[in-house]
Image (cartoon, rainbow, N blue to C red; front, side, top):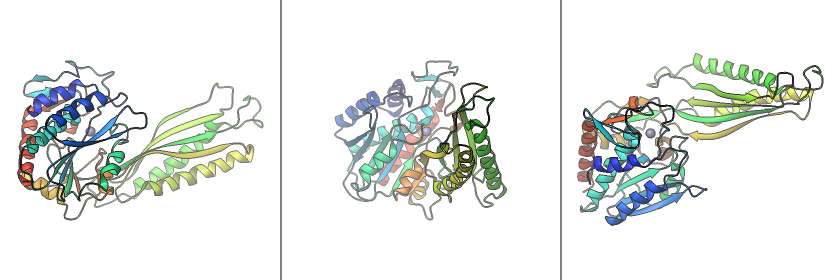
Length: 380
Ligand SMILES: [Zn+2]
């Protein structure tokens, strides 16, 4: 099966992150099995989603891991000209949810692995397929934990997110956090008896916005990232029951995109300082009040590597190209933290990702097929 046929099949599985990916997994593993390709599976706690890690070639170091996520973003509220889960060709483009982000790459990688399984490789080729990337890279840590001590040192990891085959060597990290305030409910006519969690959430927001301004005021001058400073966004807030009741609870959810040289820990500490100051003030009125910070997920930043093996491989595939930085997060930081040289390099453009009428150019599919054919030659 060629990569476009494989893509057609992959797109037909509705693997929106809120749903199970097991049908896709069972189809892929059956295909791998037919070609005698070994694979390992790791499963989420609920048993509804799986990662696949497949390998061909000898058990030696110097392997290359091709990595992609199987989940896609929802289509609700988007106006599609054709069924998002039916691959549709129009004017040299292949339309469908996930075509560019990132089932196009997975299809090509799967085709390459099958082709490689019939070749006398001297170094291995691997395929890593994860779940729940789109909702915070939740699946891939389990896959990495499972393989890290088992496979002989790989040479590089290629994350096939859409970069139009430009090697990407850095992006920001991000984490989602919740700030939960518990006040004391009471009738709004008796301010001495109640503590409004919403009122104090305002003071937390004030502290956070001052911190965000500080970060903006000291950008990283030599960074290729845009913007070149850490951004904090309070995207969700909820609390209270009625205008005439002091709010018992208020909860805020924040997304923080931090620079590669920073860590979640530094920002968490700052958040905790802001929040604990507010907590003290609430407790002066009623000792049962509380305010806390909870870090809900963490996508590690992806840092530029010196003399990157992964970038060298891209150069062998497409010739020298300037490496770049992207604004979106990927699983690259997770692989890099595990000690693997990593690059983000894949077909299609991020401009089409997550959009209605998402597509990948057939020309981009051909280009990645050609790259991966060269990669097989490199592993011979
Ligand atoms: Zn993606």
